[in-house]
Image (cartoon, rainbow, N blue to C red; front, side, top):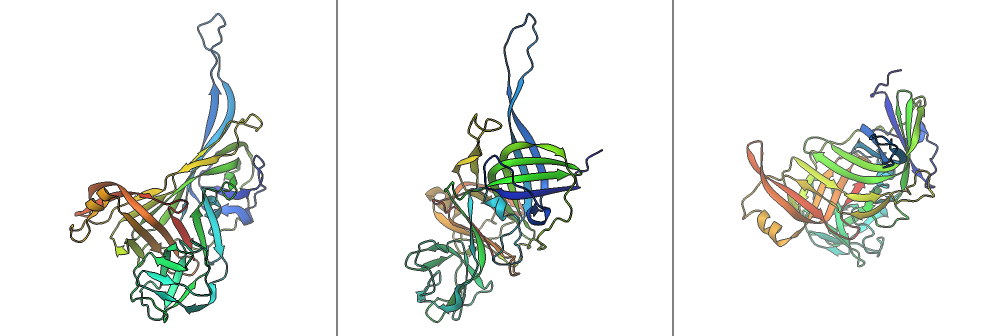
Length: 387
């Protein structure tokens, strides 16, 4: 029977025991994806035995891994405290999932103090440093802002929340704050927090099964368009078999928000970009282990180099001295925010970006600057919030 590529489905589930595939369910584990591809990565062992002929012997097929790629449209679940479909995938790409299931505090309370770029929170807030970094915060009262919500780029043990956008007015004790229900993905180096996945890729009556899957992810957003999360993963190839396409898959019904009437800010100043990207650039390795079925252990992420690029329209030096910022290694806050519907609002916050490449480029007859950046910080390069 001929295999039709469009009649396909991916099921993904967090795996609890390395080397042991999870049972997959279309009602709980389905993820809508684009452009799935899996390439076997086989360890072929060549031999050099002589046998009286000039012909070489056939290679030995040894351990087999797999390289897996696909994309997911960037969207929320539609419910503030419910992770998006892509959430479990992000947890296998060196991100920790933090769910704030109830607003903080339960009822909005007055700030203790503040400025146009910070709010000192009050008794209802945590005194743990960085407890809310990357999360949204609503501030009302004396403060006006068209978007209604700010993102926290830094949070101190003294309860000072530094904002990634400029407040319309100075925040003070007449301003009320509340951190809404949200799901946050923040970088982690803790191996016990990072997850591995079982993936089942179904195509028109055939299934490929992969276990111990981990990898990296990159996000790209286009102005007036949508965002995508692209995954590059590796794992163990656990075989393929003739398996019927699972029936009645359950998907989240939200549509990806359009990047319009949102925000893109560089150091709290508006920047006109056509595209923005952010990549984890995590590096997984599969260490050799003869105790395992294929001779390899589950992937371990050994390093990460977060960063990305953007293309803001060029401006006069008096307005934006990009070259000096590049040469001096100036650190800047980046914020990309999109969506207005509850449960489908998304923000990527980069607390400390440093330009690492700069070149002029043309866009619609205008001069723009293609800027590559490094996202600095120890387990703090970039945060993805859904609320």
